[in-house]
Image (cartoon, rainbow, N blue to C red; front, side, top):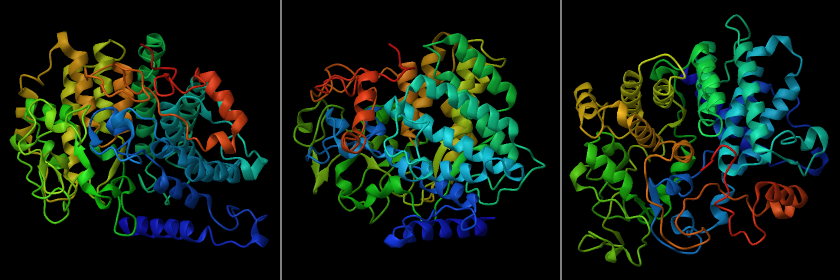
Amino acid sequence: MKTIRNIIITCCVFMGLTACDKGFEELNINPYAINELDASFLFAESQRTVSFGSWEGEATIVQYFQNAYDLGATSGFQFNENNNNFNGIRWGNYGGPIKNLVQGLHNLDGDPTRTNLISMMRIWKALIFMNLVDTHGDVPYSEAGRAYLDLIYTPAYDDDAAIYEDLYTEITQASAALNPAGDIVTADLIYDGNITKWKRMANSLLLRLGMRYSKLNPTRAAQIALEAFNGGVMQTNADDCVLFYNSLYTNPMNGISGNNPRYYYMEKPLIDQFQLTNDPRSKYTTGMYPVPNTVLNAPPDVTLSAQRGFPVGYSDANVATSPGAPVPVTKGSGLNFSQPNYFAMFALLAPRFYITNSQTKLLLAEAAFRNWIPGNAQALYEEGIRASMGQYALYPGGYGAISVPDQDAYIADADVAYNATDALRLINTQYWVSNVNNPLEGWSNFRRSGLPALTPNPIVGDLPAGGFVRRIPYPTEESGTNPDSYAAARTAMGIAADNSNDMSVRVFWDIP
């Protein structure tokens, strides 16, 4: 099956390389016509090219990772600056995956022989749009990706709450339509067409969607969580929605390893949490390099006690004045702090996790604690931790799997062990830790739950003092290419004309 998957990836990469080499005489030819390219390849391409943000985006806001150098182009969320370099990264889904999915669904419309492929494409499209709403708020939805089909070049932005309601419908309808006796989808890079796993993934995505309502509408959250639970969510890590890479197509988010790696450091709150709880996941995530600017020469020192997180609110210019700063504070051309482990989680061949058994179990633990679903909150909490640790065996670097005794010791640690009095903090702190490899989800759940109790970055920039970035601004290109819809969306979101609240305006489910 891996051979088939590699062939599909090769074809998709070839599609991407050749798509730009078309003459003017071909402008009126639909490159996605089903008699030229099966819609299943459009689906595979949408899986391969989906954007999941950047380490300097959500991962910096939620205090996993930072670029410690304020160099203009790098002056983003670490310095509370509205930097367009990081605003449009996820927006690129419109030009790739969304366009492919909309076209593919159009090509298959009304075809009863391709119900499973149609359903998978609807679920995947729902995941992408959920990510876009969680990132920006109101976004183009109903008219998105329809430039060729309907000549809509300036799509309207839909209300974020209304999008979520439609995503609920899309996920539930598409999941119900999946049929083990139906069409076989071989061009599926995630599950190789396994219907059972797609149903579990869809219900786990539905659970995530439902839990977003926990503050806004607890009754609605409880109803959706129970519906997802009864429908059948992920059971083991074999159900994880994870994308693997190879030498032909590497993990694009981890390209930072070749872009002046001395710029990048792990945040102090994450390192402190690792050290407080003696977390065995640390060694896959971070390390101390002898020479910060040549991190690819040899693996780092991953000894947990040796790690030193970069403090929030500082930069290379003033970190020497931070409490507990090392002496010397510099090391070669870099800084004397922990950096990403480029041989494991940050490696070019590291997999990317979209929806996981660990996330699902921890969300179920919270739902059980709130009496929204049946189940033992403590058991689900501990299963979520073990599931997270189980993912790390998939990383390169030769670190191996986290042993059961190490998992047992971690779960028994005084700062991890479950107790009902502190359940929400414990569950959501573990959710934060378990999503280092999916920073958008870590940031989204932090906004939803307010946990863990991170301290806001004190640097005064484009963000009002004393708060967190609540949304990523729209890319400024939209003001020129789609000006009327862009202006209407900013008004609907309550964004001030002077941009003073552009990063502090909240998406609909993120209420104080």
